[in-house]
Amino acid sequence: MTAATPRTRRHRSRKKRITLALAPVAALAVAVPLMNQAGAATPSEVTADCAADSERLENCEFVDVQFKANSLGPNQRVSPVTQNCGSTTAATNTFSVSTSVTRTIQLEDGFTADAGTKLGNSFFEIGLKFNTSEINITRDDKTTGLAFSRSDTVQPDSIGFFMWSAKRTDVSGFLRATYKEEQNGQKVFFAPSEGGTTVHVFYPQILKNGTPDGRLWLRNVKCGTPEANGILNSGNSLRTEAGFGEGGDNVTDLEIPLSEVPAP
Image (cartoon, rainbow, N blue to C red; front, side, top):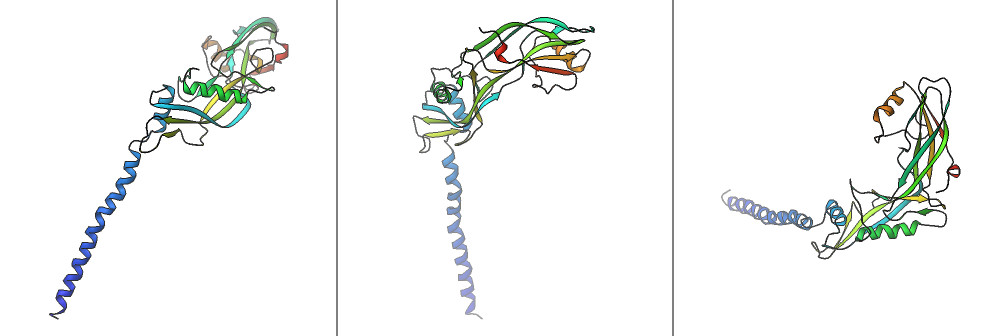
């Protein structure tokens, strides 16, 4: 029994030494990934640098992944509201219709990309790719307008006005930024991620006569209804409107073919 005691102590001592030797290795393994991430550009930083045309960038470009032609834009009221409330007969009124379209970028609130910037030039080049003989699109941030007057009928006890939804080519993809200096051995970063489709560029589609393409319709709304009261109380301020045929029982929509719109 006396001879067995030293062997037991040596066994315990060896186990302690093994534990102490492994501890620094584990700590080092945890530290390595943290160090690799420390200087990497985050998606939000990539977006901010691209938007500001940062001097840190060698290049910033929009990479298209997918697209959809004839995508309809927001539903907009594009004429003053004519009232025919309390009347039992229809009324003919001359409507002055006016709207405009421009390239828009769904990247962050208030974001614009001037043509002279790296990213702005990339958006323009991508637009050139989708400009075809069948679909002519607006590639830059210049506006294209539609303005005309025409007579139409306002139904009895109703208000009437024109609605518009522009046709656009919706191109979605991601940003690829190349930095002048490496960050942890890496110069290329993405926002929001490589292969992502959350950055959208809407290129308005233009007719051969030079006016915007889209859906135009005359909307009649019954007076005294919540729908009519909401429109009248809003004045000429912008507000969200229902799409064509989606206004409900108190709303009547009549589509106007763009071929009937007077040429500019």
